[in-house]
Structure formats: structure tokens, C-alpha cells
Length: 241
Figure 1: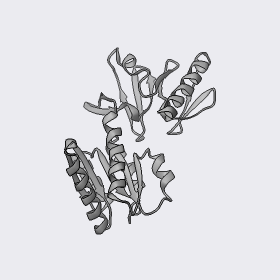
Figure 2: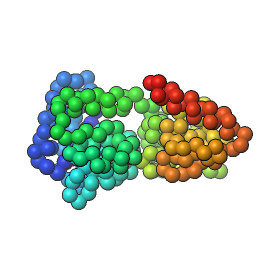
Figure 3: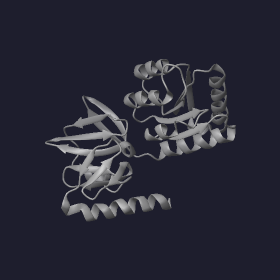
Figure 4: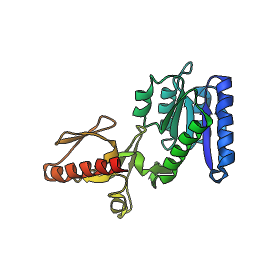
């Protein structure tokens, strides 16, 4: 089952998006799509806090009280695995939208075909993710490997920094955990204290990695050449694919 949530302050737009989604869901019953609709950001956030987030959130950007980009930040604090798709009449917010790692950005007006194509891309992205389970504060959290910026070793703890801005500190991991993720989705060692996700490296200065959250991860001298090659190979492979 795939859960999708819609938020738009205009009744006509909510109706149109819902109808677009019904058409798509009818043609793709294999996804088992269920959806709910909200007229305000506050209404959606309360529902997410109460019963958990959706797999995909379709958000208008220009809404009174709270922009869709602000809503997306709050959603990701509650549900870091939710894929965000923005639907808007303005392209002015595109840079801000993609800084949040939005899965897609659709400009209104759009056709059913454009809507379907965007949803296809996002669902394919969602289904290709690699999931891991972490025990944090007595609860099990399902985390997408792609959403991990880096993992830092602090004494006996492992601190997972996520694209949503959330940090999960765990005391123990299975001995085989590191070996099981290395080389997947850009995950690589950076000295003995960090595992970094090359997908979330904004810049490699030669001595540090600038991550998407503005953190500078120091690169030990002994592994700079190897990491530089790994960084180059990763993005070369990304470009080819």
C-alpha cells in the first residue's frame, strides 16, 4: 500500500489534484494507493503527528500562513521518509524546494500526463530505496540509506545525521553493519570516525568534505587520494545513469 497526502489551500485545486490522483490510482492498482486531503499546513501536520506521515506528500507552495517549503521542513522532522512533490504556479521557489531534496516540482497548470509522469518517477524512487532499521530511544526507526548524510562515531555511540536535519544517536550496531552498507548508494569511509554519503557531499576541498547540512567533515591525509577518486567515480557513474 502507498499512502499519499495532498495539501492545498484552494478548494478547486484540491479537487483537481485528488481527481488526478484517482485517475492515476485506477490505472495503477498494483500500488494500492490511498490518499487524504488537507486544506491547511497545520491540519496536515497535526495528522502526521497523530498517526504518522505519508509515503508521498503533494504540496502547494504559495499558501497563507505557511509556505509549502516551510511545511515540507516540518514534515521531514516528523517523517523523514516522506517524499515531497511541490505543485505550484510559480517557479520562484524551485531552488528552495530542491534544497529540501524534493522528489519533484510540478508547475501549474499541468496535464494528467505530466502529473502521471511525475508520480511515476517519485514512486520508482521510493521503491528503489534501501531501508535499514535503527533502535533509537526504545523505538525502531526505518531509515532510507539514501537519506543518511553521514554517520559519526562518538565514543561508543554512532550518530546518524539525516537529510531531514534529524540526528539519531544509537549505542550499538550489528558487527556486520558497516560492511553491509559500504559501497551502497555512495556510502564510504572517511577516516575511522565517519562514514559519509557521497550523494550529500556538496564540495571536496581536499582537506574537508562540505556536506549538505553545512557540516565540514575532516578528511585524514592518509585517505585523501582514495576519497577523491571515490568522489569522482561516484559522480561519473551518476552522470552515466
